[in-house]
Structures are given as structure tokens and as C-alpha cells.
Image (cartoon, rainbow, N blue to C red; front, side):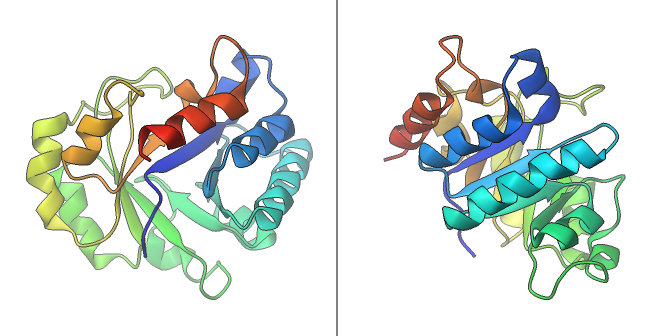
Length: 207
């Protein structure tokens, strides 16, 4: 499988801090041309959050974009979505028992040991990070850095998504270091408030 270079993550906490409606933000990201959208919610997955995720799943289907649910294989199954799992979530092998047939699984890693261990898991793609310092995660793992990313890249043939502190200014250097795609959270929300325009800027960066 091959990913687009730009991997937007719609984080509910970040959206709330910017006073942005989740469904409207999801629509703007897709209208900007994103081919994938991850929905990230770290709190209680309430009925209201599920309703909004369901609406965004429908928008992704209409846009022919891959919809990814963070952490929750059960929610991903209900929405016909892919799932992205962290080190403390269900193991990818267990998530396979929950998901619909053919659903994609992403799996986060943070260092060489985790990246090597991921080889035994039935994940379709891997993430590694934080590449740089990040403010969107509580108690983040140590920064990987570009040199370490370059060293670790040959350890897996699967698509590798880089995450953590990636901006339009440093994104090219991350791709040059071996990442197949860059995950973006905070930089989806510009001060001018036009999310669609910011997504277009990201996509244009790699065109």
C-alpha cells in the first residue's frame, strides 16, 4: 500500500481548544484534498463523539478518503474504518479479531525495539515518533530526531508515518529522512481559521 505524503489527524482536544466544530473541520480537511483522515479522541467515547465520528466517516466515504479511528477497534468496526493503535492499546493481532475483513491497521512505535517488535504484528503500516518535540500529547516519548529516523527506516518495508512536531518548515526534511508520510495535528488549525486553505498549503508543499 502507498500513502499520500500528508496524513492529517483530527484531534478532538486540539479542535476544542481552537473552538472548531469537529464535523466542519473534517469537511474542511477533505475539501482541501486530503486522501486520508484520522479521528483522534483520547477521552471518553460518548454517544455524541460517536455521532460526530459517524458523520465524518460518511464524509470520508463520499470523498473516497480513508477514514481511520485512533485506538478503538470496536468503533472502527462499527464505522467500517481503519484503526490506528498505540503501544498500550489492543495488539494488532487482537484487533484483527474485531475489525471487518480487509480493514487496515496502523501501529505506533517510538524506538528501535518497538519498531523491530512490530514486524511480528499484522499491521499494514507503522508510525514512528515523536520526530520532534510535540505539545499535542501528554508525557510524550523522547524525540526520535531525523538522524535516528534515517537509521531506523531500513528496519521495515511497511509504510512509515512520521509524527510529532512536524510543520510545513521541517516536513520535507522528514520525508528526505525516509518517512513515507507526515502526520499533522496542530498545524491543521491556522490562526486565520481557514482549515481548508491550510490543508491545500500542505498538499501543495509536496506537489
